[in-house]
Length: 70
Image (cartoon, rainbow, N blue to C red; front, side, top):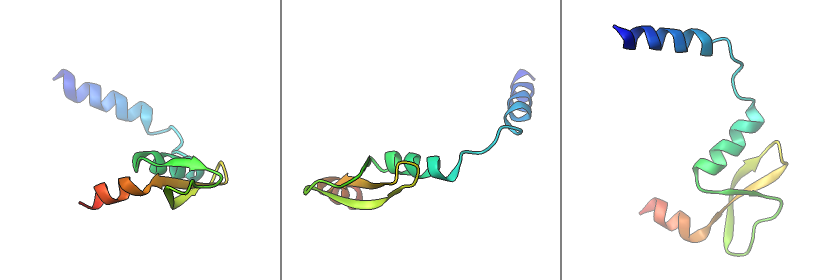
């Protein structure tokens, strides 16, 4: 009985909170992909996206890309 009540209370209070801004979502998506937001990617990295808030590229090591596809 306590679990459904706890879930209801959490959802009730979290619902009115504003969603993440689009710019922050870009940064979180980059970090989830194990990337870094940089103004310029290093030679050993490749660009996989864009970090809007920082106006930078999302860079990831080329070796990480091979591991993710394997």
